[in-house]
Length: 91
Image 1 (cartoon, rainbow, N blue to C red):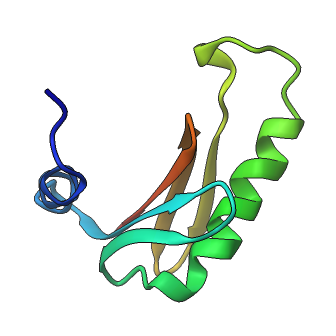
Image 2 (image 1 turned 180 degrees about the vertical axis):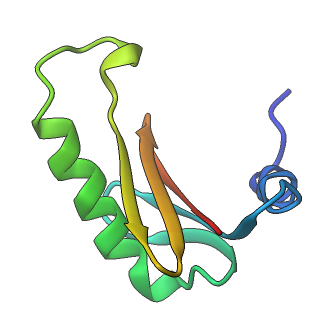
């Protein structure tokens, strides 16, 4: 049985240093968000994940790239899986 999205996001938010989490579909529609990652950035997150995937030539699960955006405000990690994309903001 799958764990509901809200429960998974609560678990991610409880990890040390995590200040925001966002889940979006491939078209950039925000499915859920918590913390400092707002639904307004869902399109940008999906677009970054899509462009990063096109840089890879393999088709296996290990070939799915993780995008890491670093700034003074923290790190943003973005990864697609199936039809959804997850972004996690950490400080």
